[in-house]
Length: 499
Image (cartoon, rainbow, N blue to C red; front, side):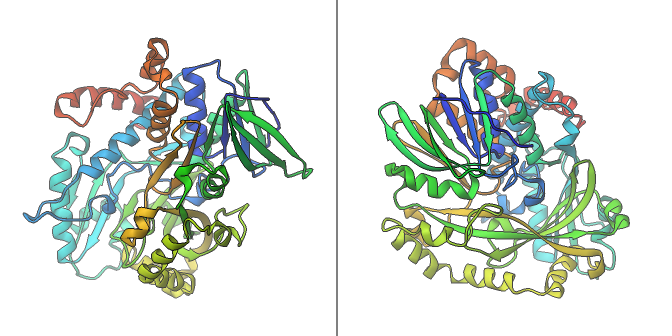
């Protein structure tokens, strides 16, 4: 659905219509109904890049099954689970805000965007089985994960996910499972929130419009916006700008000229999925199953076999497979995006990253030159009985991994999600990848705290925030708050039809 509503001199401009902008716009308008908000989106519809349901795994990342959040064992053999606990707590804020959106009538039909799907971790071989056992011991000791099950019993694993054991040899295997996992269509929740925002007084959305330049002035930012239909460029002004444009964020941040953008670079990684076309197999599998990362693969490329529910239809995906690209956006990107992002202030960092990440470069080249048989070999690790005729390869989205000066000094590519904000708190830009969409409400709430502190401190708006996210000022990780967590979790699950 296209939009063409323009608000002159809004308080806030949101660049991009993905899950970050959608949550920030809805949250800000809910906290202060007087705010004037304008959204600009370069594509002709909303949430068509990274947030599109086919361009991500759709996992409600809560630290349950993702082994990359607990990658190391301590000297005593235990597994540190602090990062998984943190991710769970952050996803909880997303659940609460989305349940508020449903309960208050902002959005309807929660099954359009979130559905219960068990989350499994799956490993094979003695070393990995021992690791998963230790991980389960650490995870299940926390009240977030107290319901997590662990087993090495093949029959039980077969009950949880039959495809995992079909045709498998006698190598030891193990799995953990929690029924509280979710599958999320981030594109759907984005469109629903933005549809609501478009109906609010003082709010506008313009699709097919690309922000091509930003200039700071004493009262905020002058923006130059190109209309894709006519080619005309018009101007607008905003007190605050949020750049939530996925891979398009880095070029805009560089154009802003803020000191915080100096030295930043980007490393784009394309994605591909194997999608199952056999209805019988799709019906047999209902779980999100995550395994160990492949050698030299970035964290976003941890393989997983996923039940997806998109547009009311159940499907089955496996991947992701990486692909070499120089584009920063899947639909509206250019092959010149990467070369044009190289600036004098980030050249040295990018060169060092390239020289010290030869394994990653080799991995991307290898991924891009794989045959279907090569990809099926990877799938066979999860589903030994898989047949090539039941699967086809599709393109997914593009993730631009942020590269900072500090990463260049360390010789690493920076993974994760980060928000860059100027000292005047007039512009924020989102950089990075997973688990961003899942924890998007936590991320934009941090933007609100930093750039709109009055909305968190003012008693009236603070009360609204407490209604939207009941745990925002409560540390639910602590054992003494376990009962409160369970109460709020149960309530949000009921509203979202997850229980």
